[in-house]
Image 1: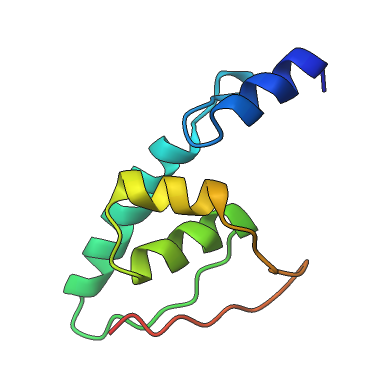
Image 2: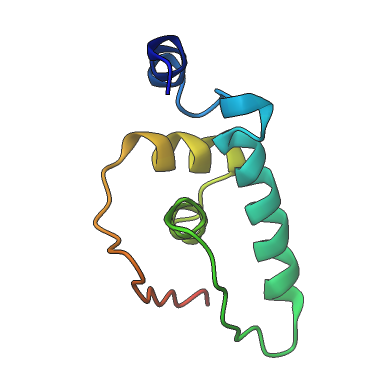
Length: 92
């Protein structure tokens, strides 16, 4: 990864678009929308297979944060999600 790319990402982790793909902020909007739809289900129990970034956004949403705050939280708080970890969230 070019140094300029790393510097650009470090300057704005929540909004930087690596390689022109989605930013953490854009991903937070999608995670938030999915979470809201899931909570409308009669029995909102499910298994979600995803990467750690998405897990971090779900955890931030569980804290009651709105998408912008979810992105900022996920981008600025350290995590300890191990490779192939199972994370359980009680979203009631």
